Length: 401
Image (cartoon, rainbow, N blue to C red):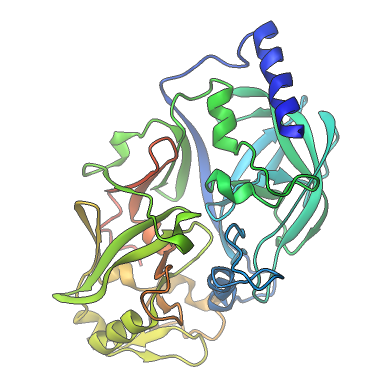
């Protein structure tokens, strides 16, 4: 009932006052930064990423698989700034493709400049050792985006209680709308508009598309039409998968090869901004380890190779739709300038970014593509057409690690 009343209220307001913003053909761009949380001096990203993996296997209290569970956060995160209220307050939010609720209030206080709807909201972001959760209330607010565009009447969740977000202000959920199920306190089965849904409703953009790319030392989170100047190839699109465990997220089908060897036949998995590494099915991981000659480093949990083995690395290729997207040898290793901050790593160690899901292929979610892949490519999340797209960029073949 809340959703119907809320929508009718907004619709009436738009009919009386006109659209909050002018409908655009262009793209809204927000600067995006990558932050590693070093709150304890060093980090173990492997342990944090395991929480993301564990969430994909969680069961609910009735013993059935939880179909719409948001994924917990690792310590490596994409961060975007959002201005809320009038006068505005800036909030630094974690960008998350594994959830769909946008909320603030974890760190910077909210001044209640908006109208309290009385509708309660809550979410728990999976399991693992570092679970995040929040509960709060929706407020009708004014949101100002990075290019000065103001969107009125956005229903923003404001947290009253928060656990384990790591010093950030909240979450910008850009996952599919189905991930809002079980978050409304008085109507758990209902879904409601995501942030990108509201941008379309407000007339800020014509197409319900989120875009991610790396740009020099920072990145960009954009909404609307793709910016082809960021791409060095055509954007290749593929449909959202129909495989049950992956389709609730930004899931798609792909095949992976190493050199001339198939290590993962065509199967389903997801793309995930909050995972640092690339996770693949355990049998594919075993084939990759054997082919590279890598050994498991007990201190970091990562595959480690020698300089000679690095020189012999072959390309790791991802066959998505009608395209092939390659990770060069340089793109398959953890950035060595960050080794000193990685728990247990040696400064001159060479560590691979491929990790095991600990389940064999055929489980329904056989890979998780994290930021170590995304920083090399232009990513398109197209809700209107239920597609995911990728293109090469100037960073695809860069030797930056």
